[in-house]
Image (cartoon, rainbow, N blue to C red; front, top):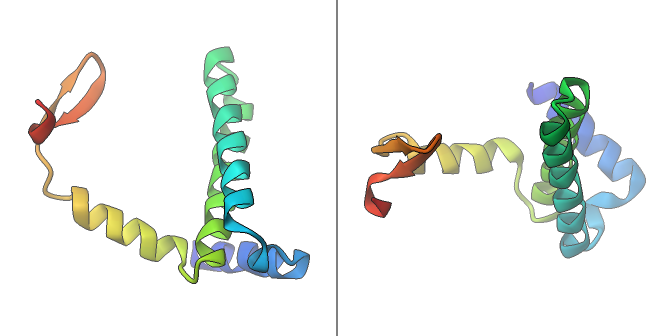
Length: 99
């Protein structure tokens, strides 16, 4: 997976996206998240797969623009949730502190 992340980062550098405005990149993230929502609404697995991939690509670039990498961000998030407790409520996991 790391090699694929590096390929996306290199693609981003080749296009000059690594130096672009992060707020504009975040707009791309939200656009792609919208495509994921549309794929789910239509039960379109191919579009869902593509949309999730596009979200990951846009997040890799967003992290890169801010001197981070996606693995670093994911590790940080996992460290925060790994011991989290809670329960499922109507199909959504709710952490204990929000119950």
